[in-house]
Length: 493
Image (cartoon, rainbow, N blue to C red; front, side, top):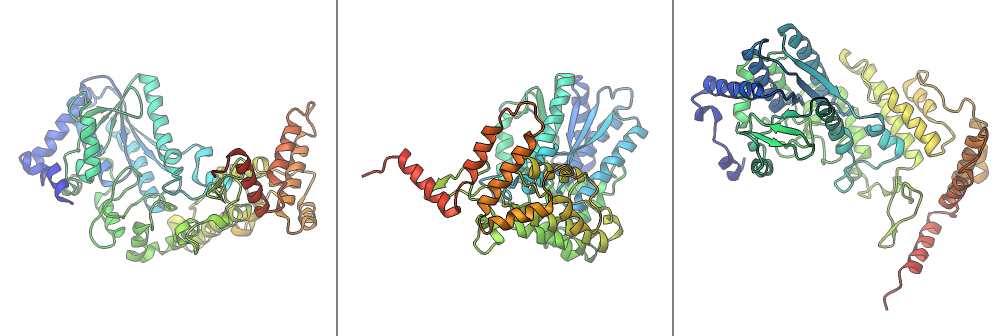
């Protein structure tokens, strides 16, 4: 912690407030009074990490103190599962949500837990393998909004739609980082009450941060001194932190907005926004039982452009953008989505790893799914319908990697061209991949319109297919794009 951070909060919250028990009692009483003040329902953000666990435990203690006669409004506990979370953390959070729901019902508390996931079109694999989005990077960080922000905001908006308002409780602390402290201090100017600020992202919602002045040691002291009220063992949480740390204690982070100790973080196992997943590497190094996660790190390295010889994944991506156009920047084409062969390779590697983990890993991962069937069905639809990849290769890839029959339906059962016809077409086109893709797309468009009473839009689609693929090769496309630029932009003399 820097000197600036030390000046933000006292060395110990409890020392300033008369000791541990008095400090905890004061926070619990504060939370109880905020709860009684109005009829606005609460939403608690729970990531499974130490800060969100602390905030939720304090809320739970406040509700217990009030008793069933005074707990008059719902408290929703929401946790966002990106579907690519570190499997150990995902299992921990999922088990915790189940336990807290059961225990809340037994204790008669108005706590309702919710596991939130991205909508199918927003899922990581649908975008990476299906649409061919390149692995996230700082200049194209497409994952956070889709995987984390949208699911939470959808739920919060639904609560606002039903009740008119909601109070969002977060375990945010000023001592997490200097940047975090500055952000919180900036929001303090618009506060409607102590520790309560308007939510800048969503109207009619407010943010309450009950442990904003706590230090890191205060959080751990509380978790290790106070029993978890829904039955989870906080010592296991502490052990998970230790196991994910390369020397010394660091935070467990399961949301991109939560800062961490150095570069250590805990979140999506496929994350390419960090140089390497130190937390997963530490877990594997510190616990022999977790060696089964090693293949996951290998997949991550395959999509991390920094690990590639050229330092970029340009050679894996189409020279055309997603809309089929060639766009130049300093005379070079801006790379578009991943090519078909690399997308198919990634799916095979992912399923191959899934099969390996299920076969060789411990009993608790024998049913682990690195990718959901619904995601594969959407990927297959995108490949065949949107990208005109008539080969319908996904079932074949699945069966080759998993060694079992594909459980989904085949999209091309009624197709006029099968595997043999497509292989023949590719052979006839030789090395000219553009010609093959153009003919394949033209055939697909014609096939999709063959039963239509009116072929509205067919000729426009055919024209688009020709415009995207008429180039002799990539060099021809680049040269034509350069000529087009010259005609549009006068040369400076």
